[in-house]
Length: 247
Image (cartoon, rainbow, N blue to C red; front, side):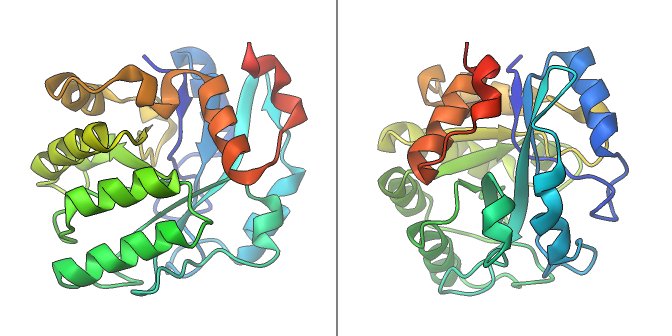
């Protein structure tokens, strides 16, 4: 059980079913100390308006002892790695997860998918690439893992990809974990919860990590301190309200 979950959706993304408060209550039950709300970027059809992201600054940093990161699952929009997170949104957001979604950028050939993903990492805004093992978007996995290590971007193991979404991801996820290990990069674990009841569920991610003997010291979710220090190195910003989570 790791106490940090870095990918989930609320009712602000209308295909999800839980509120921020629902997640806090579940976090207290399952031992999550810090989580990131990452509703879809505004280019998705059912995503919140960009004002939703600008206004996240009104959220409390800690609710009943649980830390809340203000995040987004942005969309990679084109081969140049542009994402739908910019301008005033950036002033309110702590963590940017970004990935491919068919309504925004339909699957391309392997070369184009790889180029778009690497460009998104190189552009400097993205902290985590979501569900890179999606078989609908073939990529050059060693090249992506090497770029992720170079640009200090984590690649995600997404637990939902093994259960309800992106079926057929497992072989790619296993190869991604091996490639990240070889490149010396970071893994991020995300439940990709669309209901609070699956918060912190990394069952299949942990199985893949065990199969490839992935080093725990390269997993962002192991402690709140590790994740927060990663973000501080990336953004230059220290979130003072999270001091109690750094113990």
